[in-house]
Image (cartoon, rainbow, N blue to C red):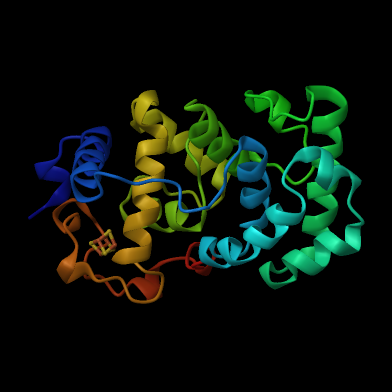
Amino acid sequence: MNITRKWASKKQRALEILVRLKRLYPNAPCTLNYATPVQLLVATILSAQCTDERVNLVTPALFGQFPDAEALAKAEPVEIENLIRSTGFYRNKAKNIQAACRILVAEYGGQVPPSMEQLLRLPGVARKTANVVLAHAFGINAGVTVDTHVKRLSYRLGLTKNTDPIHIERDLIRLLPSDDWENFSIRIIYHGRAICKARNPACQACLLSDLCPSADLPLLDEIPPSVLSEE
Ligand code: SF4
């Protein structure tokens, strides 16, 4: 089946992908464990270059000892580093977490501000982290979270030709209704983990295959290496 003939526009195809993803993954909660917006912010900073599973292994001890922004702001940096070491880049992450928490304490009463502009001022917070926090802690769709799975699948599904997160997000924002930005992103992440893996996409088992220009293609020869990582 010729995909471009069956689906008149990229937007139409994106909307059908969204409908099917919602059917496939009716409940798609954030896979990071947290009890408060501050904990979600910290867990999301920790998830850079790391799996959510690995983050969930370290956060019980981290949040047990330092449950809120005040405690993290006052901690000895080495204590945070020791607790998050296995997530990688732990010195930098500890530095950013503490600096971000100090700003939260000094300027926002120890709470996470519910705005993209304010979140982007925090060390270690780029649009990906801000989108996750706004969507899951506050129910605000400020943008589309673009992690490594969203990057890879959006490219394979022909929803973008870009490989950098800022431009991919712009492309997806144009294609999707704003109420569904996070619905799309979280479900694409689920699909990337379950079916459309970086090295071995299971196209035969994929319920998006008739919508996907990359279905059954020799992907590894055609896709830029920058969209193939799988944290
Ligand atoms: S058809 Fe294959 S490449 Fe396309 S989304 Fe499904 S698994 Fe990924």
